[in-house]
Length: 187
Image (tube, rainbow, N blue to C red; front, side, top):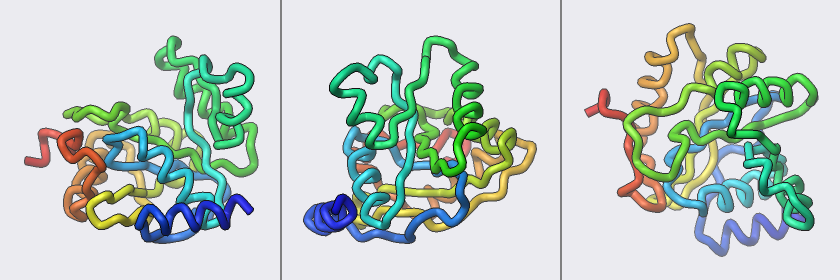
């Protein structure tokens, strides 16, 4: 029933789904560009519409009754962001505990334009040995989905540059285009 409702909502919002469920049981899914809270909502609707269940990191403070029930139902994983570097360790632990997990991450780390993207996803993917998929919410073309898997190397900065360039080359437009920044090294 949730899938049918989500398909209808996606259609009513005018979005076209690109791709289906990530084929591997565990993966990191990069969602770019993250310029609005609507990005979370539209990606939740999209992934449920195609039959998937994704996860995302949510501040542990949101897991109180009754909100916590809905946040978990929507795939939220409580994380303690006050512990800095241990955030990556928390997510690695979640991947190790679960048989299936598609973790959606916005590498920008915020809805504001940033010159430097966060590389925690890279550490997680290489540590747990899982693939990274490039996903997008293109508000310009009204398309949402994922298209390809990116092979990571040991060079985080080179991989980040390659990933940012992919989004730039494909002309993906955020809901709030003024919040987009693919990085200073791509000018």
